[in-house]
Picture 1 (cartoon, each protein chain N blue to C red):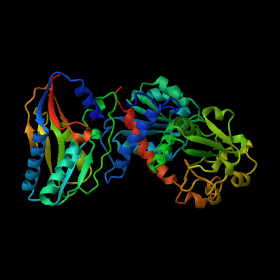
Picture 2 (cartoon, rainbow over the protein chains, first blue to last red):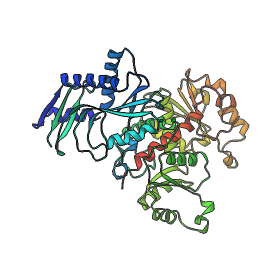
Picture 3 (tube, helix red, strand yellow):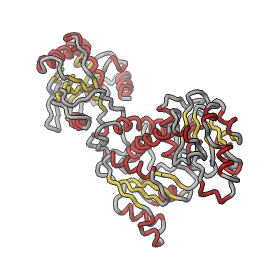
Picture 4 (tube, each protein chain N blue to C red):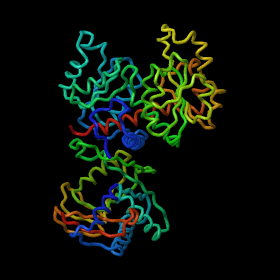
Length: 191
Length: 306
């Protein structure tokens, strides 16, 4: 599990850990994104959220709760595992563990907001869009991320961004979430 | 956890973790097979060769569908239409196939150990799709998947395997895996069909079907191989059906809600009564459906770069 990997690497206190978002910052960013989603799409009509496993799924649920608080309407949520659509499968010695995709609503004709924790090279999002389109034909796909750290390798841009955090390639950003047994925070780890 | 094996030849050496990984991976593919577009690009550019030296429709089709739904290229190779009739050896045939850049070879052969021999001789991954009376690992894995899908846990699960255990590679693979996972495995059939020493694999031997079925949660029927009838393993088919055929009455001896499995093809009215095969407790068609998802999982896990 990526969560346990995160906790073990942080527990033993890598000295170079730098806090870039606290739980309050994250909550405010998610609230703002919820308002932006509603503003851009003029409400919740035809809206669906799809989180990318694993961090994105937790954030999609948080976003849905905020949208419900604001509009009083619950919107459908799906969970997407992008592994089978990765562009490096043929290069790997051992295949990554799969987590089940579960999108329990018809995405055709819907406005789908993909949700992920960190936007980096854009390769995950490319895979996610391919995975999504195999499930149906959305009217529109938008992208919400908590952190955009730059270094894109594909022409992909987020629709909603919690925070832009400039990083060097050697650094590693981790979004730690309560749902995974951590205190909410975003940290930069120097390699 | 990942599958660090080049080949899948037998369930005997697999760890509980490896078996669990395969079943969990199949879960993801079960979702894919339920989609309108039942295809993912995971094995794009890979080549899977079905090398079947024995007739098989179900297993070959299942592997072919699994590979195609992973976007692999599939070639079906059967001896009647090939150089094998011209006297080429198994290994030479396989090396020729490998020279054409096959990544995975799926082998069905009438000799026990054929898959092992092939795996030693080629760099491609080899999946055993049944070798003689030895093993049929993917069939057992889809059986395990079907049991688990029904919400049954393997620990202390009571399973009866009924029929010609001696000549059944399906039975052997299932015994290895189920015992490993903590199940109580009973084998039952006429003495001519229960091999000596099967108890050493951890199975309990019964010769009376009613006794063996008492309180089990899973009834796994084996196909009566009628083509072996000339070998005097049983006097008549009628007698066999009376003593070892699964009837609705006998299903009642098992625990309420017990499931009935069969690897197919079934002999209606011989080892299984038609009303049992078509009953709600029968999961025979679930087994077939799950076979594709489980084989997709296995092909995916075996497809790591060499």
